[in-house]
Amino acid sequence: MRIFITGICGFAGSTIARGLVAAGRGHEVAGCDNFIRPGSETNRAPLEQLGVKVVTADLRFADQVEALPPADFAIDAAANPSVLAGVDGRTSSRELVDHNLGGTINVLEYCKRHRAGLVLLSTSRVYSIPPLAGLPVRVERGAFVPDAAVALPPPLTAAGLTEEFSTAAPVSLYGATKLASETMAFEYGETFGFPVFVNRCGVLAGAGQFGRADQGIFAYWINSWLRKRPLKYLGFGGRGHQVRDCLHPRDLLPLLEQQLAAGRVAAEDRLVNVSGGAASALSLRQLSDWCAARFGPHAVEPDGTPRPFDLPWLVLDHAKATRLWGWRPATPVARILGEIAAHAEAHPHWLELSAPR
Image (cartoon, rainbow, N blue to C red; front, side, top):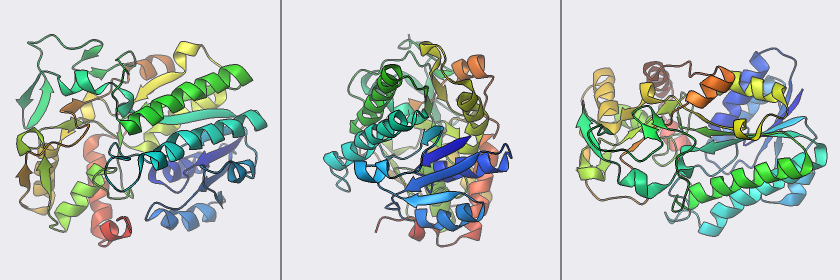
């Protein structure tokens, strides 16, 4: 099968590309990247050495997408993945929409033209902010957990949010671009008769992820702790109790292989949460405790200043993916953190490599 990966030199894209090649199933893997993300160029040569064709292209520009080689399936792993994009002063709201939604539209036109299927990597941040921001929580072992003594907003349990949880606005500009991309992907697939799958991912993390606080918090925190860089607990009283789940993108590969082979399936089965789930959920305080045990003590400054769109607890329930595809995350959070730490120790300039220029 010919597989084309957008954002192939990003963390998720490059991990998926390497995994598809390593699986030895005869896939012909290629992809594109615009290389505007600091550090992404470092993934190009290793992929090409594996026989992966890497093309420079910017998905915002239809003529560049039209020139891409044909494929049987596209995996869209290209996006500005920051929930603060469009409001943080680094990118404009128009740039965010052009990258995340405009780029998806051009990929969908590519799929239409080549009769290719599509797997869209989406995000947990498509879920509605107000009910999550107002979630009743208590602190347990240095982390927020849903307060079982109070009625939780359905459909949410201690296992996390299911796919039926509200996606009503506001979800952030970033979340809106991804939610709109999901809708357009399904519409294109129905209208033009090609298979579409949407995987809503939890926080992706692992060795080799570029260290940005707004995009790769686990890698950023571990690299910064090791180098004794300044760190802050932002919002929520400055105590670091806010929680996210954690998923290594290589764990997506068994699911992707099934989706690539499945073709068209029932409409309700085309969208799933994929995450480390409650078993991988970790607060910044707990991450700090792990770092202290690995590297020694380091002071973290408390700063209760709230940030836009921040949430106390966001964990995805992957039960639907387990039921439909037999999928479960394979890499426990301790292993993910250990791999990031070993990579940080071996690459002392990683934060500078992936810092905004």
